[in-house]
Image (cartoon, rainbow, N blue to C red):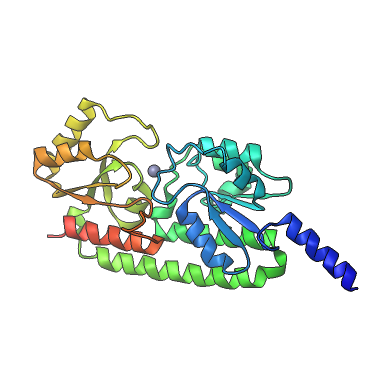
Length: 292
Ligand SMILES: [Zn+2]
């Protein structure tokens, strides 16, 4: 009896270097933050893309292959946010590992495979709508429970708590944003991360200077168009994201007299460390820039 127990423990720790706990790999810090809240002490969560680094242009280092191979659960956003990283994940993932595309809706997962959803052409920035972030929490909770059924009750309980937190955050954001009157709810941003946010919180996305994930500099013509739009619609502020160089929006702000403020699409360490801090900072910036 003792001998077989010892054997079992050895087998476990050999399979899973985290002391028998499942190892969960998340591509982004937002997904990792949710996964950590749900995992608590039952699983080890690691993040593939360093905090504050934009995933669109991220090329994984050689060491990523080992992290991917070690993981029992692989959490990706989907809608092709991962691009090159997804190739690396599919190539290096371990046998029997579980892959989840956590931004996907139940409908999408009925129509397509997880890999299909992970690579699908759609706007990936769904986490910027707190109501859709609840979907992330549910998907992450389900993946952890499927990979580690012995702790499924704990995962389910902490998933419920996270969904409640996100619902409360969503309500709080709406209340903060009430200070911006309808006719001023126009946002000009640098990269087009805010379509889901705008649709959910009642803003009109007037312009994005940089097409999503293109990695290209905007053309002079595109910049002139934004200047014209900001002038015509008398937008009082334009918004840039810290992980992207903001020279273009600086030019727009200089030419039009609009203020340049920050909207975050990912947490930036030392500025906004968590998802909730990021969303609150965004709501405050919008009120600061757009409210009368
Ligand atoms: Zn983006």
